[in-house]
Length: 456
Image 1 (tube, rainbow, N blue to C red):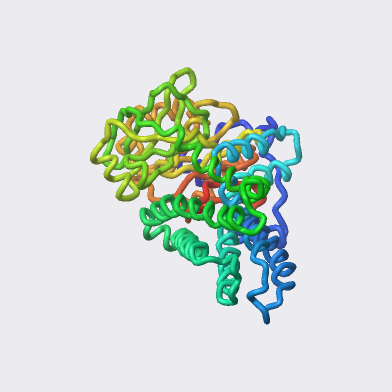
Image 2 (tube, one colour; image 1 turned 45 degrees about the vertical axis):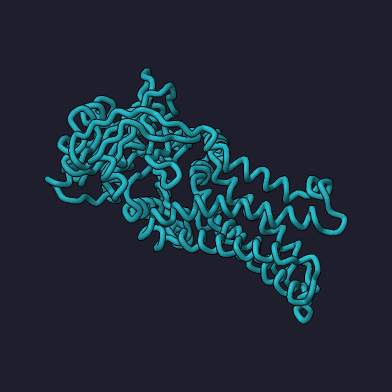
């Protein structure tokens, strides 16, 4: 008898092909290597952007006469700063993210599984953001070194004001990158957010200064030179991208119910119903911090819910001191579970409040699914109403009470569910360590698997 049967009884979901579990080919050692978390698509995008910048560095820096640094033209380095900055900002813009998900999920389920498997990795776009932002910072430091050499060499185009602005901008960029390092971000998340936001805005202002001053004040400069320079228009695009979410900033009423001191079931109904699989950022102090949660719209009902579990100071305060209003901004943004439409059937694996991102898809029933949910005493923690709602759309769901039965082997449970139901993919919403354990374990077994990632 399998783990799934011992905990829940025999699986009753019919395989998608109607006769037997979906066949799969176990990857060989080379393909299993590329399914390791170190080789995830996020990292592949990081390395791709880094490789492009290294090639450009070899071509540009290799042509410099380092014996006469004052004669080096800083323009190529400056252009690459702006190019990387633009890529880093735009790839995280909400409209761009939604467009990427829309394009990736146009593939029909009749396409080969390997193609759909790769398209489902669209949510790893953050690798471009991370690598491009780091490259922009490194190129700016190179640019600053060339400017400094020019100033020391008596270049009249490098004035004191321009040099000071560049030094200040370099310090801001280094601070933003340093606080975004995973070990720093996890330990000092609030500081990361404030540096990222307030430092980012300040850096954008300084980018305008160091870009426009040489164009307007240099020889042959002026308004025509500024409007004809592509870096200026790139900065326009970046500025619009940063400003757009804030143009939709609003304070909205919320209703909060806490079945336990671990969770706040929060309802919004301010004339907006987001799509299933999206997320919304909420804040009590919009200039200081934002926290994103999965939207849970219900078919045929206006508004939506958020499931907010105690996982830190902010969520703890939210549960203990329930606000009557919160701030929201921007638009609903697609998340990892949106890729379900690429497959004929999926297995959802969730722990704790990870049920939130899964629930709207289970309610919508757009794609046949089987749920595995492991949580502390589900009724006591999340309330009978929520558990009944889940059971109403997933009567065969495996709801694992970790208080009563201990922590399950979710990799083995997911594997058995795929074999029993004929699902084509696994979507896991859990903490980082467990998510990657499930994703890596499934993919090394030849099963497409997806899970939320925590990037900058």
